[in-house]
Image 1 (tube, rainbow, N blue to C red):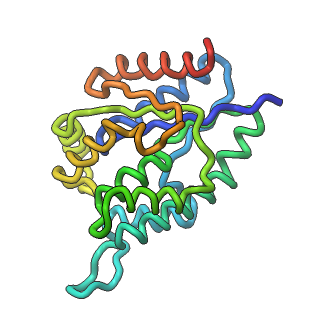
Image 2: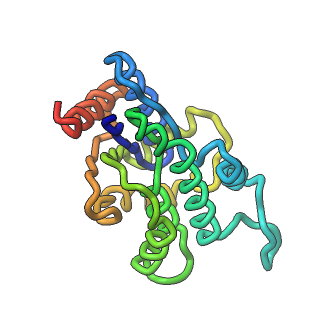
Length: 217
């Protein structure tokens, strides 16, 4: 059986990764092609713990009182969740000929943890995060939705959810700058940038074009 493809959609918070994952899944289904949609953090046991940390409900002891887990701890939690994700969900589907579309993958770890690290150089942090994820299967295609931080911030406000751990505006500006050169973080991967400031359907059309090109259609 021919293996399915592994496609990842990335971007800062408010970039539209979840929306575009859902739209791409519908595109595959409308063509009668098998597709499985997933996300990171996952709904597994480690992913559930990460989601609690992102919602500031999971804290650890600090010198000045309870605090969120450090960037290094988060890196290891994300890596553990990712390997479980691959073994239990991603790889089995791919081997069954199903295309897997993931809302975020290891590029999120490389981006977010390098932006939040408080020690070492950015190069040393990236190297360490890469090492923690060295057993992660490479995607066939990574799509980065580049969005102006102000646009993404307005989208987050429109959702009216409580801001999560990484959703502070200054940090999101730093993340947008890192995502703009994301190909340097995953050398050798097929990565496509798409202007995420466009309308939802315009972004979807660009995503589909990138996927069709990857598939040789």
